[in-house]
Length: 248
Ligand code: PEP
Image (cartoon, rainbow, N blue to C red):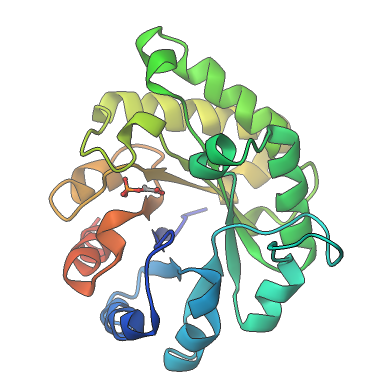
């Protein structure tokens, strides 16, 4: 089946209340592009305000705990994201895997908790530079997929984001050939494990996507959209990426 393009902004730890206007502008422009699903994942503090300012828009968290509640100071549970109006969550971002020592087992538990709470999930994988240079990128990423993707879920609610760590926030991007090889390998691994349902799972590329390179990267084989960091913070930078996805 044809998969709709999916463009997701990850605002990371950026954005105060004054930034809600940018989100409104992004969602308003996205409404002109029928064929593309657009979502923004702001800091937790902005989820409620963003949903209120852009009703019906896809707003998500950037992480969640694997427990539904409890003594976990500073953490946010998946049902809390739902309660705030979120419809999706990113799990396993490399900044969480590296900065907070999250393992594949942790990421899998978070994904399971999120799916169980009714959220859609964007599950991130990606290799460090040294692994890419040593020629082990595909093997490394497929091990992450095997270890962090849960066993049983509604396929349309889980997307994989392939984000080479060395491409995040650096301005560096892999060649289209390398992106296609990785996405094809991920698709084949998902098909081997989930059969036909793998055809419903979207595989996004993330890492220094911008208005200039989006058409080429999103047009690559088995690339169903983009997870975008820096260029998602303003409508001026994000909308051209949405438009590029719509033009494919
Ligand atoms: C990200 O962190 O998910 C990301 C893709 O960042 P950037 O677009 O800034 O490289």
